[in-house]
Image 1 (tube, rainbow, N blue to C red):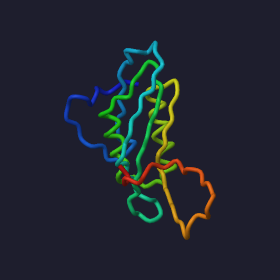
Image 2: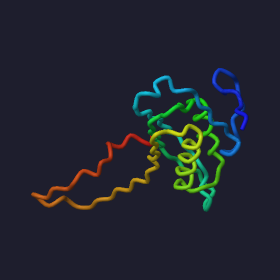
Image 3: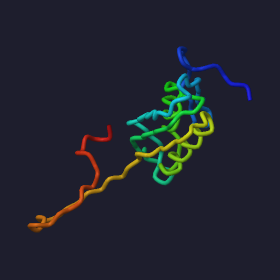
Image 4: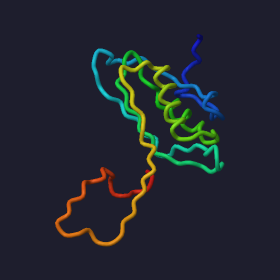
Length: 143
C-alpha cells in the first residue's frame, strides 16, 4: 500500500470521519530501547448513537513503541474526526486502539480513560469505619 506524505508541517483539511482520517508514523530513533509514550486527549467527543447527543471523554493512550512512533498531529486530527461519529465510547475506544496498533505495530498498547464517574452519599460515615479510596483524583472537570 502506498503511503501518503506526512501531514506534519503542512496545512491539511480536518477529516470528516474516522475512516477518512490518516494516521502517520515516523521511525523510532530509539527502537533498541523500551520506553512508554503517553498521549492524552482531554477533549474527545463523539455522538451517542441512541440520543444523538455529544459524548465527552478524556482518552489516555499508552504504548511501548517498536520500529515506529505515532505522529502526534495525525493523532489529533484522527481524534477530532470522531466529533460527528455516532458510536458508543466502548466502540470508539477499541476502534482507536486497533487502528493505532495496526498502523505502528507497537510492542504493547493500552487505551482507556473514558470514565463515567458517579458518586452519591448520604449521612455521616459511622465512627471507626474505614472506606477504601476510590482512586479518583479530586474533581477538576473533564480536563
